[in-house]
Length: 200
View 1 (spheres, rainbow, N blue to C red):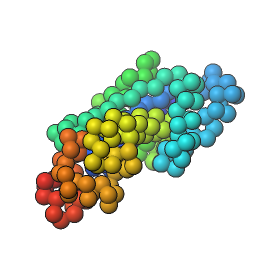
View 2: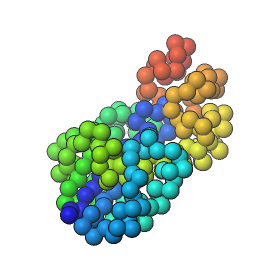
View 3: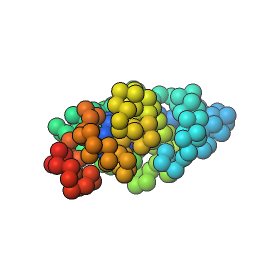
View 4: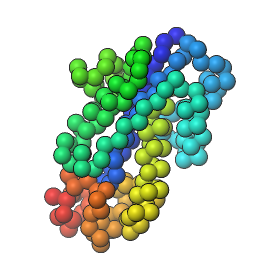
């Protein structure tokens, strides 16, 4: 069986914080039955409980051949655009898998000719173990950053609860305090409400 690399991202739809892409390479030919059992619960990270994701992170790092994590800052997103930033981050993640995997799978996106050879898989984080592993790694890396250092540095925004996604409390905090350095100024201001002209 081949060495399969999967790539996915976390944070594309956030109002604040980085976009994080990850690639995970699984050597399916040499994986033990114990490793397969440990990774048996892999799924789209959004469908897993935080406790289950945290447990899987350890199993992924223990049994994957390698993993690569790439982070893009809010200012990069503002300068380059969300889609381009997302594509670039996933390309860099796949490029970090050395030697190149026999098969590279990407959740939902064709990364174009500049990327290593790969195959787009719609809803791949629910069907490919390698993509699901990348999904878990990306989301856990991002959530830990937002719940830890980001929440400590900018306590007024409640990042420890919503990790930068749209919630009523998050929108209220931005209305009250204005955007923090972690907020994406290029995000469609309609998401914040009619009065948040800072984001237009």
